[in-house]
Length: 435
Ligand SMILES: Cc1cc2nc3c(=O)[nH]c(=O)nc-3n(C[C@H](O)[C@H](O)[C@H](O)COP(=O)(O)OP(=O)(O)OC[C@H]3O[C@@H](n4cnc5c(N)ncnc54)[C@H](O)[C@@H]3O)c2cc1C
Image 1 (cartoon, rainbow, N blue to C red):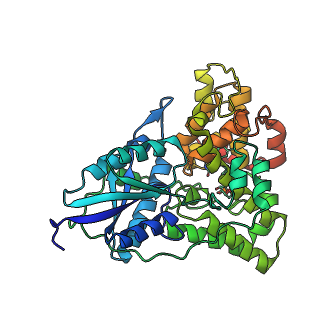
Image 2: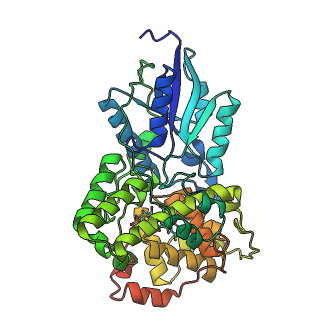
Image 3: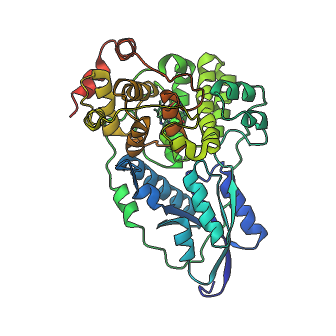
């Protein structure tokens, strides 16, 4: 192809769905390119909002999150290359990057994920302002919006109402087979990788995590298959509240958050597992947790900016104290409350925490320190390898009592929780000895 001859392109804008398998946005982009006799251009942007910006003086992504995203994008690029295609990774907002495409590339359509939060909505609006058609495709949920209309009509509501309405339905949409990628060869010279990507890739993985968390679709499949083969799913409900353990829970959150693994594929794999090994409360419970993820995604869409207000989407009047020293002690695992300090040090070292530990440290920040819950959510955002806007801000708002089901928040008795889930003190000893 002559590099200068005009060419129509459909852009697949990769956001939080870093995979080819079971990815409706990617499939739609392929279809659009084919129907329009256009070339498919796969593009991922390292957006300043995530890679540079701050909130409450805290970075909007942590080194572990950036490394994991960089690995996931590089893995995606390799998958494309095996199909003679290419994923372009560029620094900047999507509208900046696309408006600097070479003049002979005529982009009319951008296909991307249906936004979960206002940031992506705003970015899409900037693309529309450039005169582009934006097709926002629901790419990472268990259910199609039309299929669960009754449950969505009730939002914002409680998780229980949402789940019960959904559970009356048929079940999650089956995963799609992988599409055949069209090579995107129009830019003959590969762009140089942005510095942020190169820096992120250089961050060493903490050796203290239970699972070596390398980004990418293949790694996700490996961890998930190992978990299924271990048989641990059959006792998931009994072990999931433990603070640590290789198979205490699935440890898949980072791959789900970066979209390296499809939740609905997991859902159907669990059903297969149940057919082969028998269903029980535990096998159901992992699907139950995936429904929490689903719930928060739809809840976040409904809440919009409300999810980031102090009084939350529910508009509860709340009063907090200012206690910068207390906040810093909490962040650094120096509060003097051993279970909180152990967890906060684990978070700082690994970027990951069990669900129970997340609940306890959140409860401490909100109800013992009496701080604005958004500080806690922002600290988590700056640390978590599996940061996911809907799950993080949704869970924080829920515990603070300003989110879904605002029944006055969730207050945990830290002493009895530590005694119950860490009776031999192994977890606390391990992390309190880590500086
Ligand atoms: C304050 C707070 C902040 C959180 N922030 C995040 C976040 O940024 N990203 C994130 O992925 N999870 C978040 N969670 C949810 C949950 O703690 C993690 O998903 C879970 O601990 C990850 O471990 P796992 O993959 O072994 O989970 P498993 O127990 O194996 O569950 C499987 C999957 O279900 C989903 N899931 C499980 N519990 C929840 C939940 N309560 N809410 C939403 N989804 C859930 C996750 O995708 C998880 O990977 C947060 C929870 C709390 C209390």
